[in-house]
Length: 118
Image (cartoon, rainbow, N blue to C red; front, side, top):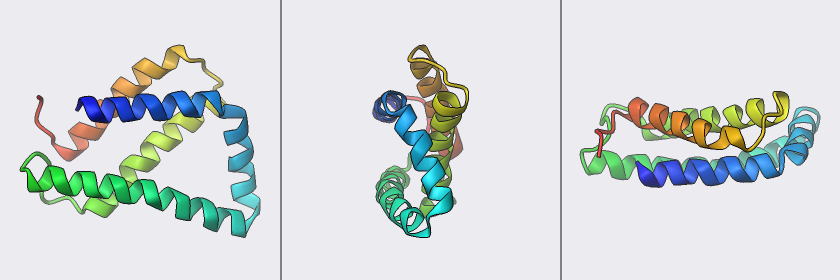
């Protein structure tokens, strides 16, 4: 769980530091099909990494074996990304939000996968 929390913390910190750029990225994603395809392909790299992490957790008996790893990875990745967008772009909250948001997202992530407490 600590690895997941650290990953979320790093992602949220980077997102917060680049919030103005991420606002533009969202706008361009909605008006350019080529940009949207490129962004989707880049996101797939992260989703695939999360899928492999979920598969390892399942193989170790630490995650719900009934979950489809790709669907779970995509859904959880979208949850984290969209939470960052809403928090740092739409609501324009500051760095003080990172720790609490990372903790909540991590708990939701591990609860969704049914990862037992350490």
